[in-house]
Image (cartoon, rainbow, N blue to C red; front, top):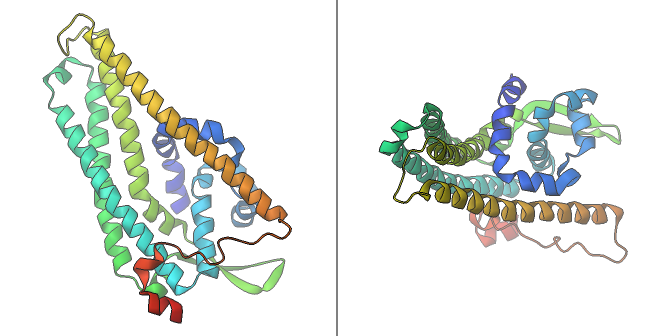
Length: 285
């Protein structure tokens, strides 16, 4: 059932990724999923189900956490998500306020109803993202390490051919959807807001609806909006895409092995662990 809803939501999730299209164009194959993990989890038919690939990386991370992580790692994972959730509520509230303000513009009545509809969708999704974030915080706050490990597990166990005696737990797609839903909704809301604003300015220019003083004010505002938005998204998206390519290269070098190399992360402690336990407790663990 979770996979069915994932398939239905696939087009909307793609819309939420449109603002970062330069990232995916620049990163290319470096963002491809771990084929071994996807094949082991979904079988050879995964290529016919592209919606599954959007969650593959997170599911693999959760699965490593379930099978290799300690209780401290589990709590650090929860803390990191709670910190992210706090930021999502702030951004979602700001976006909802912006959408509400634009809906009060009198000039919106003279524009095609599609513009108002897109703003309303953006407002609704931003409010839902805040609501779902609050629900997520309530669920995560009421779980200890053992309960959270069970919550992230879908109840399936399996073994690998290379180590048939080791029993592994499979991560839950439903749990991952619950964890990612607020961010996905907020991403879709931002994409719709940008599209609605561009649509509004474009229709105002095409319909000759005067938004401000000056004979060429509408086209000037439209050009400024398109240029500034495109530049900001292109610069940030390209930087993310370049970083993805660098990370893929680094992982490949690590897999191939470096003679005389030393893993610099051996003594690394995740920042979120600072919030999970006091230092004395971590040293004792």
